[in-house]
Length: 158
Image 1 (cartoon, rainbow, N blue to C red):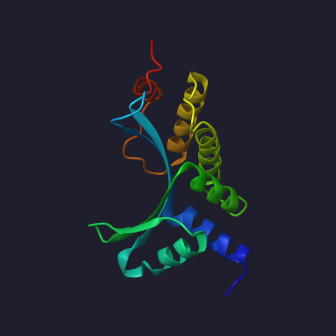
Image 2 (cartoon, rainbow, N blue to C red):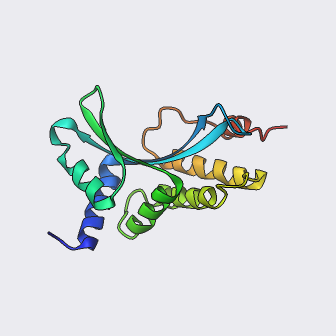
């Protein structure tokens, strides 16, 4: 078995090629804002060749694997602290998604530090700008939201 840095470099390369980084705003029934932020690292692979996803999950020690109806399998990792810590570990090896990874890592830092208290309007504005950076750098985002739409979702419009 190879060294830990070789494993991390392989995983970062896999993320660069067959992965995505997202920061979504999800509707929520409880809470003051009725919204929550969900950071996600996702690795994709044809279901016929899904074994590397299990290996990545074992190396990272987290995530869940699911088979989609279109013949693809995903390894998804959510959670502010988990996503932040994994990205910090992979960042030295990431080449093509470094901007998204840095932005998502910054967002997770804000979110994990504000967990027990409400986010300020200033923090929400920073998060909106980080979402826009991630969206801009992603190759194919189906639901790209404008800055105004994001601000409206978070109640930051006059």
